[in-house]
Image (cartoon, rainbow, N blue to C red; front, side, top):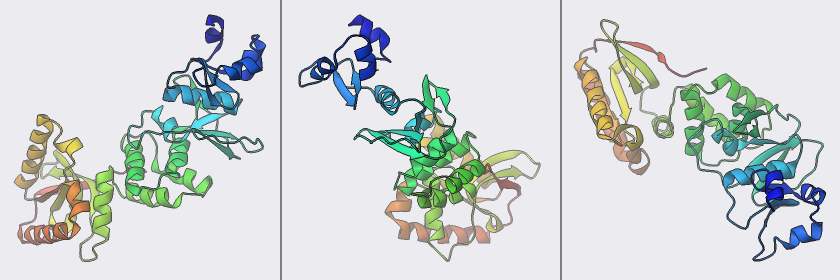
Length: 315
């Protein structure tokens, strides 16, 4: 048994390898039956234990099953580059060359492609380039907010360029790309998070609200950097702050920095409205009234003593 484990890939092994090592095919499959010591993860692909496979073992099984040239992609692939947002995948998404024909399984999605990418080795596994992982992954997500979380994280952390994402979505399979292309436009406009994406959608749905810019750098009259405005109505000196718990209230230090942020901006004559993401989705009509009141208040104030940089989107 130890010899088989040594020959396996972290406990995963193919039927061809088992037979080559002297295990009869019939014996191998019998060991995967109820209460048997092994698990059949995919056709002709075995786990040399009957415990719950880890997600990594499913990834390995997918590569073993899909065979030579197979490449991990999707949100699971993006995790290998450090993408943290989006729901943890429950299936493994694998690309194979278009002429090959293989069936998907409940846990392994096999996608044939004419544009099989050159993989990189991440954590010992063959993974598609990050831009391809993001494109393939978001094409299969229906929730626009989740897509926004994934794409905005990658752009905000300078892991990919917007132009590269746009090219991949336009050049690759068009199936399912309408949603990520729509979200990518918001990211290109400067949106940095899922909460800001929902805020942008709210703002765009209210035709009586003025033009707003996203993630704009603000400097005082001496050119010193003050802050980045989540949303800015430049003509009125109005700043809209989206106070997500994750970035503003998760720790005492975040609470203090949030308050200091508001004090810095108000000290130079800007009018700041703070909004929780839950209000954007839970009370849009009430929020609309709050925004209109805040804009009216900002219009009565003297011009703020600031200068602005460009929106900070990475193109």
